[in-house]
Length: 214
Image (cartoon, rainbow, N blue to C red):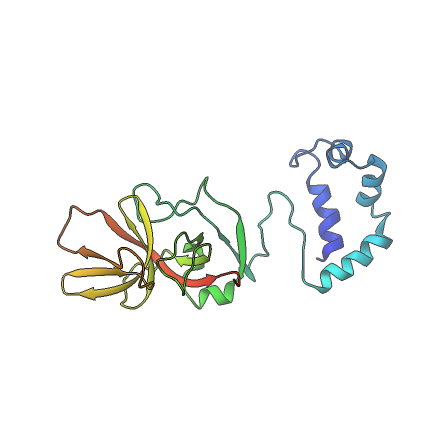
């Protein structure tokens, strides 16, 4: 379906037992439009101007998303949640329930080539310890299914209740969390694999960085 059909069907879906409004008048009042205008859209009596707009919107590949719908088309795109950088209780993952700050659509084929789309999260970076590769305010894509630590890769790691993003290095018996920024303090964090008093766990591997040009 295109924009015009999405609009009409979406409006109908908002009305009635399964919708948010008991009748068209409630929907019209909530939107600040005259009930007769909404009625004409529902009956496809105002199609001339809407169809002109629909051709433009369809031409650029945009679509409508109504309340309760998936935020992007199923199959072609995957909606990745942006979450707060705080650990989920009882595991190494990131919070994904009440801390979701919107969804971002990525092509599913692109995500599958990098890992497990269902396990991916976006988070905003705070601090300059990984500059210039990852800077304060940048957004990173993290795959929580990739928790095996490979040297030279960048991971999100939980240490107690703190979340850090570091590059991995290894020496016998230890994992080193290294900052790219030579001015960062501390430059590296040593995790002794035999020391059970330190509660830490890899959250996931950083796959992608999105940043504004500064």
